[in-house]
Length: 452
Image 1 (tube, rainbow, N blue to C red):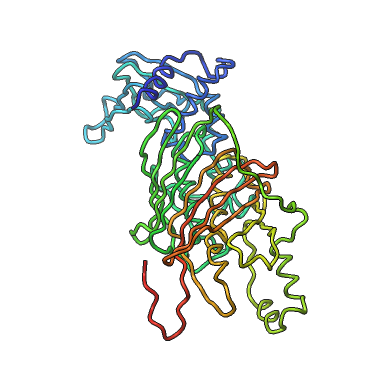
Image 2 (image 1 turned 45 degrees about the vertical axis):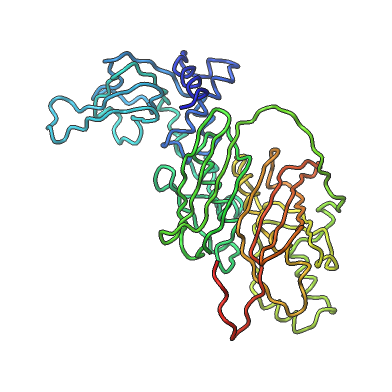
């Protein structure tokens, strides 16, 4: 525990009063409680909105050493989470020795939840001075949630992206994600999916007041679309203002992807913006991908063979709507500008919106480094090697964002791209970089392509 954490814990332990609602406008106390609850393993997969409501409803209770916190046979009055001190769980004296569940409860441990009985089955006694948060039983519904992003609505009622970014919690800090059959698929797991899901896993291990401000990803092995992905989160540091997480994505026991994420609690500070959003048409004046495809299928300037072939191919719309600012004459320039936003409805959780932007950031990104080299008949392939993002300001992924991509260099089989994302007000909200492997595709009969 660092000095800032120690001060926060001390202020929490000294809280009095029935609930935080009685503290009026004491935002610091509410923030401290919200941050604490974000570290409780039981609450790990709750949406941020649920954590905030629990923070307003919990009661603070103090006990002296030796006091009973709960007695066998007494009514369960709610979920009790230990904030400071130790408590011992012990069975009644008439319980057989081999069945006695004696053990010690420490900070972040809890009792009174998940029992099928309305009365306590064991005794809980304070071993030291003890401070607990108690969520009364009438607020128990706050512990039941439909998804990790929304307490009241299932993922099916929201954007496909929200479904892609929904994870299953397997254990504390271990989650499982999937490549959904209705999502667009590539030869391997889409890089944006790995970034978005790994960021979602990391986000569920920090309190909801801290949001990602930077991430750095490395792609190690191509992922298998037909297998689940296990995301294991390591807590590198927890401070009052910042938190750092490392995530490993695994398939078949092998690490295929790693992500380092830094989170920050919102604060006021110096501000400037030198970057200027390019002068491009608004998204409402541009065609989306479906409209462009439809035009190509009916445009007599394209060969009939091409149009018939394209019409027969299964078309799966991406969960991201994109509208390109440049015409086909710009396709050889090492740059690409397009507007994008999530399709469908997204829940309001700010962490979700940053995960969606992270997912979308890998779409058509590295391919821009191939633009100056495109020629008729040339077949290429590319694989993302690493990917970095910096979130400068709040972002809404279901509002239009302008993605400005440039490739200043390609050399040695690697293409380098930079990116900037602006909202419609011209604010720079995200900056990005990526390096990718870019090679000519091997034709039949040639030696197999070298592995990374």
